[in-house]
Length: 340
Image (cartoon, rainbow, N blue to C red; front, side):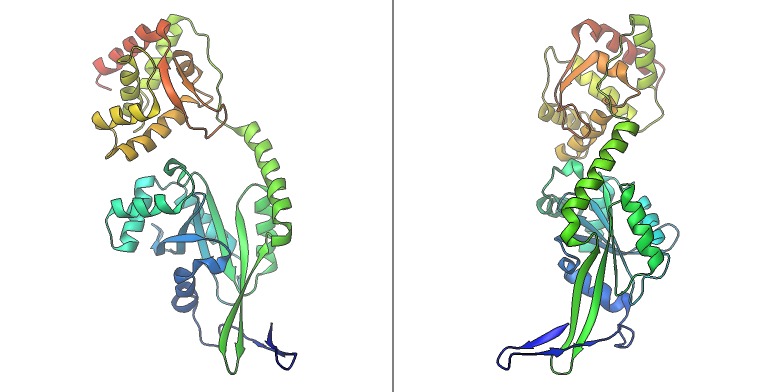
């Protein structure tokens, strides 16, 4: 890295140093810089937690949300990544992937020293996606001055399998007159090849999803007794989602015609499903995903809705098939009579 002397048309080489030589620490210096200026990592990020302690007592350096509503796990090393930073980050990412929207808002509220409503509003203003997309996917950003060859190899291999992980170099330089400079650079994926790499990875990911996806729009053609049996099983599942699914079907039963998404959200909230209408909307998204699981063609036999026909599309205008209303009501009554 060079300092330009414009008037003398000359360059002065800056001194490349290590953070250790400067007496700077990973946790008390580098982490603080990135927390206050996350764009040094090459994009607009909203930091929502710092030094978050996992149940195993290890601490996640920084947790952020990106513009696409992904959770971003940021793992920092000072001068050398070591040979296990990738594995650390994967463990953190796996744990955070299970965060509900409410847990994320609570986490950010604690970080801000504010209430959860304020945290939710700030996140929803920051992201460019619908709030129900929050934490649909996760990413990892590693930041270090240097990277061990084992880590580079592992990162490239993980990306081939659809893991969104990148490496950012933070190189310190000093000048006797002007002090310390930090040169950030993304080395994986290389910026010059990013579009090509993204397209390639997306293609690989789409093939994998189409092969292993649990999403389906296929409907069953069960007779009445078989359909009743399958519905009773679905309405009796041991899951916190099940009471919400039953309430959703009760709402549809009460409607002579179809009902749009906004009205369903209001009805769910009136029925005590969700702390507010926005929360009810996120729970409705979970119900909608349940409707399109490959294992639930019998649900799609009794209810229709508008959708783009692919995984992740927002559903709207739900309506029970008239010919199956009595079977749905019978299944719900059977489950309710058992006290499920």
